[in-house]
Length: 236
Image (cartoon, helix red, strand yellow):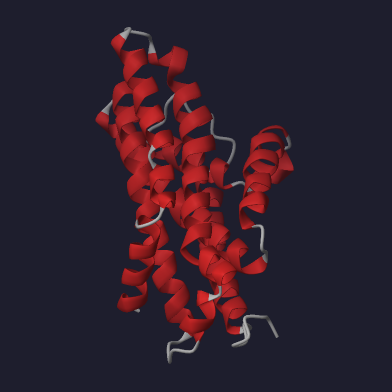
């Protein structure tokens, strides 16, 4: 399992894909720093930067890049077949790649969100945003890793989920929020540090339970899906 994790990390950070992780977090920090430098009240920019950019764009897009990258490229170029010939349990392969993806996503998103929260309010708000981003990293990564095994266009489907389901339906149609990871993240952050900058529309219990369900169900299905791959690279 550790060998798979090291190979995955080397492949992920050795590609141009790694450079794609930097612009959005830097933009988040930069906008928050500019607003703070001009002495703007957090109520004027906090929600737009933290929720509109941080939770709605930076977190899911970074998770999408990483989650689909740790396995999707191997499915496309055929190297997955080589991995499957090794005497490794399918569970260990998925868990190793999931762990690498979560760590990469969490490091890339929790730090800028902590900084944004610190600039917008306090270290406690920053910590609340970082914890929520960690939960979001787990849920988003599990979902996007699964998509990379279910379809040859995981990025496209991931963008549909982010833009359509969460960006439109999740904000305006109450019934869809229970399946919106963005709403879980907002609810958890707001519970840890209640603030007017966050408008939670779900209870924290629902958010926590649904986050756990996303992680467990997507991971289990991903393990079963990988187990259905034959050595020819097709599913049976």
